[in-house]
Amino acid sequence: MGNWVVNHWFSVLFLAVWLGLNVFLFVDAFLKYETADRYYYTRKILGSTLACARASALCLNFNSMLILLPVCRSLLSFLRGTCSFCSRTLRKQLDHNLTFHKLVAYMICLHTAIHIIAHLFNFDRYSRSRQATDGSLVSILSSLSHDETKGGSWLNPIQFRNMTVEYVTFTSIAGLTGVIMTIALILMVTSATEFIRRSYFEVFWYTHHLFIFYILGLGIHGIGGIVRGQTEESINEGHPHKCAEYFEMWDDHDCRCRRPEFEGQPPESWKWILAPVILYICERILRFYRSQQKVVITKVVMHPSKVLELQMNKRGFSMEVGQYIFVNCPSISPLEWHPFTLTSAPEEDFFSIHIRAAGDWTENLIRAFEQQYSPIPRIEVDGPFGTASEDVFQYEVAVLVGAGIGVTPFASILKSIWYKFRCADHNLKTKKIYFYWICRETGAFSWFNDLLTSLEQEMEELGKVGFLNYRLFLTGWDSNIVGHAALNFDKATDILTGLKQKTSFGRPMWDNEFSTIATSHPKSVVGVFLCGPQTLAKSLRKCCHRYSSLDPRKVQFYFNKENF
Image (cartoon, rainbow, N blue to C red; front, side):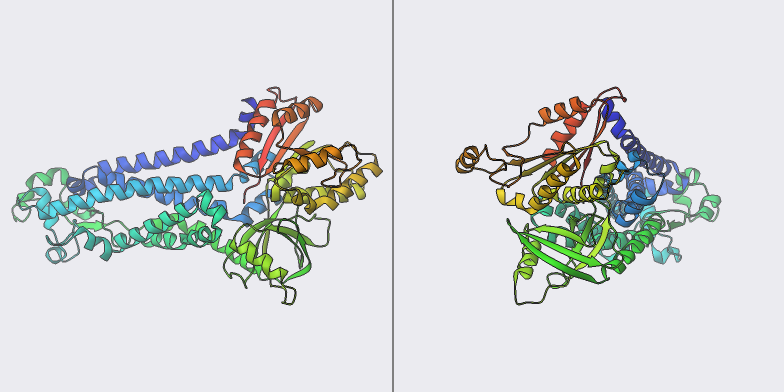
């Protein structure tokens, strides 16, 4: 629990402030519209649902202001890499950008539901009050029309008794933009589920760009002023609390109370979203400029298990370990960009990625590079962008856990370590690395066999055999593989990988691994880095909390997960 507080105090504080602001804005707006004299007559028709609709609208504006900021990746990379005030605690919060983006989206959905339900009640009451012929205050207020007031001083948007709610919805700016925004929001949220993103990334990619219609609709949603309040001049001529009692005498020249005049509230949503939209547009312009710079493919390697390695050069490209880029292939899809972790080291004169076939786009890309007599497809690159793995060398002890192709960020780290040892880098803070690679099939281990072999040799030559402790785990195996490995167990190298480290069958026993690490490094700060599924992340996060000491002077585990 103590370690959890240390790791998450800033996140908890930030979320508490965000939730507190949502509650404050909602309650403040609700009380304002429930008590303001300007909306006294409007409340006579709509009741408390007016305040609910306006309060949720304010919260929608607030969260729509925030929704784009977590996906300004260039800004986040700048904050992570160049700002001196970004301590490790603050940089870790940047790794939760997509989590916060999702939370803000859920809050938008909640307030959208409140806003829609409140307005459904509002329009029902507008319709019933317009049908009323009993001469009541509500009936008189609803009968005010554009023709009678000549100044557009109406209160009920349903001007005629035969006018339907559907007609008002699809012929008014507020109604039409509301429908468009709701449809866009539903499509974006439903297509952003884990299953859709993993299995049909193209669907997620295209539907998520409906945010353009949402933002544009939000900016003009308030034009037309369907929800109206009494003008200041009208209130000064006759206070609504007093004049409401004499509504039957409003047209009497001897009465001091005149017929009230109303006006719509000017649109305010654009004020909330203007600055973030400008920032996001600048972000997209920068990323478009970078993506248009020429990329030269220097080497193409086809690995087992349908994995394609691309080595590339690009003018002005500079990277750090563990970073990722977005890749586009115009011949396959001019609009689709997919994230891939860089597998090269900053010390190398090229940058590389490994692409596993995991969907239509990746399969088409691999197929295009497999064609021997066709020209190499043109590739566009945007990035690089920062991730949690950038901080790996800030820890005395690092635990790297890769699942399948999730090994890619750690390939970059291990390569960089190899170069640092060759150059005798004395600034390296890290003293020990534990590397776990979990794969379903034996062919996957060949992706970085040469790298691990080189590291083994380099560690032996420098007398630092204990610096790197790596374990390979095979989860997809049968009795033939196990029997073959058992018969050749006494050999110097592993029969499956050719490495000195023997392959283990099954999954790691994380409690045993963490207990051993905690015992071996009783006073160290240990960074745990994962690129893998959420189920594995939960297990590792629990182990980090369980094996961290309550004494800050003793071993502490800090969990970090890759998020794209």
